[in-house]
Image (cartoon, rainbow, N blue to C red; front, side, top):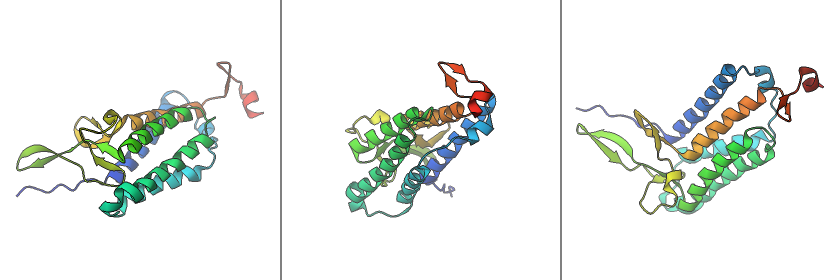
Length: 204
């Protein structure tokens, strides 16, 4: 009898991606000699917008939305969470690195808006001793990748070697780079015309 593997919920993969990005950003600060004291002084405006948007996406993945309402109610609720996230990005547009984060979010919103969901490539599963490709289960955010999808290369079609069922998108990669850039910039002294300001000027 073959052991049954329990699939990891896609919202859990999102959480893992966010936590991993933060950890890598912290490592980037350490590796480049940044200051955690300065990073800790980073002030983000309207942080509740980001938190509400992210929690909303997790909730939409957890709750059971009727299949008949995925393309209307579910779709509108999902776009609503992205409105909150983009509003947070707009409120913090002057933060170094936030522009990169915003570009990544916009890439994800674009492909979702065009296809009424994030096109996601098949899972890879073991069945009767054979490796087969199986379309993902439809949810509010994710939908199986199809031949007639628009801009499918922006969907969740990237994977890490050896971990085929943790798909992510180009937008996710850009967001990760942006978060690392935010931490990198915030951990350094302010600059004027490419020159770091002295500590006395920074604290004044």
